[in-house]
Image (cartoon, rainbow, N blue to C red; front, side, top):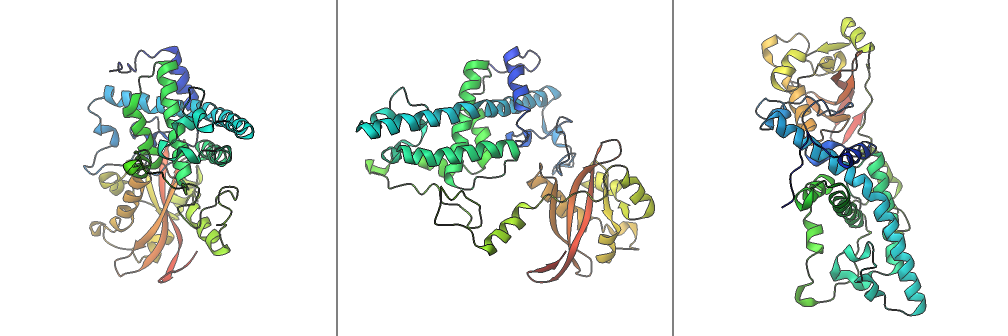
Length: 379
C-alpha cells in the first residue's frame, strides 16, 4: 500500500503538481469530491451552501486535518490531469505514425498494439483491438484534443463514448505519472474518484473493458456517435449526423446556463437601497445558504408575494428549488428554474452567483420571464 500524503509535508514535486493543476481552469475541485473551505474561489452557486443536515459541507469532514487532506488530494488529481495532456496527445500521434508505417509496409499492426513500444493504443479496450488502425486513431486523436480543450475551457460531460474513453486515458496516464514522477500516492482509488467526477456513470466504460463473451470478436465500435442528437460533434468523427437548425437551437438553450449577475459589485448595495433587490439573507442563512441572498423585486411582484406576513415563509418557494439546483451543479455560475407562487403563478427565474463590492460571494434570484403556457415562455 502506498503511503498517504502528509498535507503538511509536501515535496517540491507535489507542490509543483498542485501549482500545475491551478492552470486547468475548466476543471473545478468539486469534480474530485472537495466542497469545503474558502479555497473554492470564484462565483459558483454551490459556494457556502448548507447540506441536508443544515451544516456547511466543510463540516462533513471529520476534522480540519481531514478537510485539508481532501483538498490536497483534489489539487493533486487536477495537477495530474493537466500533466497528462501532452503525454497522451504525443503518445497518440506516435501510435498513429507507427501504425501507418506498418500498414504501408504490410507489417503486423496488432503486434505493435500489444508491444512495449505502444504509447496509448495498448490501453484501449482489448476486445476491440482489431479495429485499432491508424485511421481509427486519427479520429480518436481529434476526440482527445477536444477533451483536452474542454479541460481547459470548462468540462461538463462527454459528448460520445470516445470522449469518455479519452477522459479515462488522460486520467489513468495522469495518475500513473503523478505517482511515478511526483510520489503523489494517488493510486487506483483516486483514479476512480477522478473518473466519477469526470463522467459520473462509469458503467459503460467498465463494461467495454471486460473480455468479450466466450472470446467472440466484437463488432466495430460506434464510439463516435453523439449521445445527444443536438450535440455538436466534429464532422470528421460523425459526418452522418450534423445537427438540424432545430437541434442547434436546442443545444444553444442547453449550454447557455450561465446567466450574468444583473447587479454586480457596488451596484448591488444601490439596488438593495432602492428596493430593486430584496434581501432575504436572514431566512436563507437559517435554512439554505450562508452567503448573502437577494431576490429581485420583479420576481416577488410577479409571483404575488408582496405584502405577505413574515411568518408565511414565502422564501421557501424560491429558495428550496434553488438549493437543490446548487447541490446538483455546485460549480455552475447560475441555475434557472420555474418558481411557483402561492396562487399557482409560474415564473422563470435564475439563481445567479456573483460578488459584492468587497468581492465576497453573494447570490441573487433574478427574473427571466413569465411562463405563458405549457412549453412556452417569454423572456
